[in-house]
Amino acid sequence: LALSNIQGIGGSIPPMLSHGLVPSALFLCVGVLYDRHKTRLVRYYGGLVSTMPNLSTISFSSTLANMSSPGTSSFIGEFPISVGAFQRNSLVATLAALGMILGAAYSLWLYNRVVSGNLKADFLHKFSDPNGREVSIFIPFLVGGATVR
Image (tube, rainbow, N blue to C red):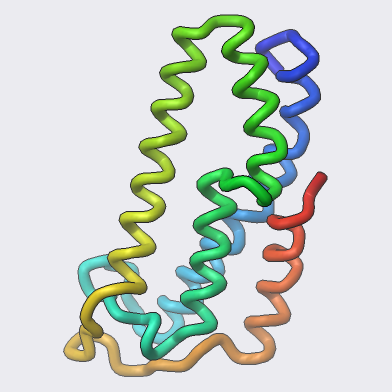
């Protein structure tokens, strides 16, 4: 909105809607993990793709949307905002792009650390994918995170 050009104003609404949906799905993923393992410390997690493949898939799609990957609701607004920012002030837009790259890097690092690697069964004991109730809660966030226009 601060760009005061058509790209910035037009592109600002989808990210606001997306920001209400995508981080909520990521928080739900953390909630499912906490419900089963009673810890939020990243160092205790690893290898969850082998024991919780559905949650890993949900986490991956939410992480992609959080990074504003093309095809997600976050990208729909981020791209026009970036174009408008470069038209207005290329230095500020470059710094913002650097922030987006760093955000994508830490999102992928976190996903890789929790889902990939060796299973840390010494710390984690109860492995089960999201049940029907949890999946029904995830669905609106995933659909909205992929289709907000």
